[in-house]
Length: 178
Image (cartoon, rainbow, N blue to C red; front, top):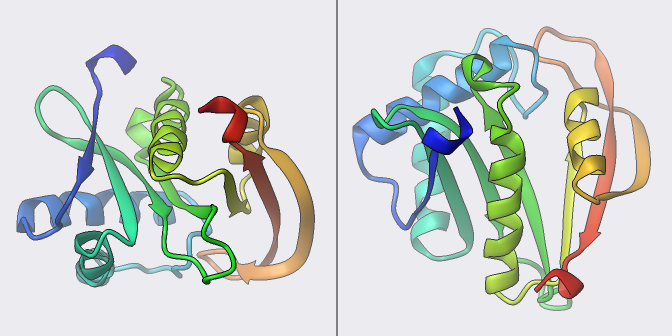
């Protein structure tokens, strides 16, 4: 499956079909228990609005939006590289919203998205990447990809169905990878 997947960088997010497809991936991940800033029930309209609001940041070049699609064009996953940082951190970027549709998991898509995201960040002149996750599965992926645990914050956020969860903060120095 992984060889059939293409990852594209979107320079704009105006196509209603693209927004709907990204909304579907977001809803699927939240329904699957992903703690990615949304609570259940997450409507398609709310999920699509999230992507519409993000469009300004993408168009301004403040954020890289990567989208994984199969040969038929179905969106299976996405990840963001947030380039815009405070003025004293121009060398840093945040990785956000690594989302893989449940039907596309266990085929290396998360790893492929992360590798492309890291390269995109390096190409943008970034040398330190930061992310956080509440998922043990994602933690294993990040560790396998060479990310370092900075710490754990207990009771950081709510899970989609309620109940507090911790988040693990990761960082990766990519300067030597460029």
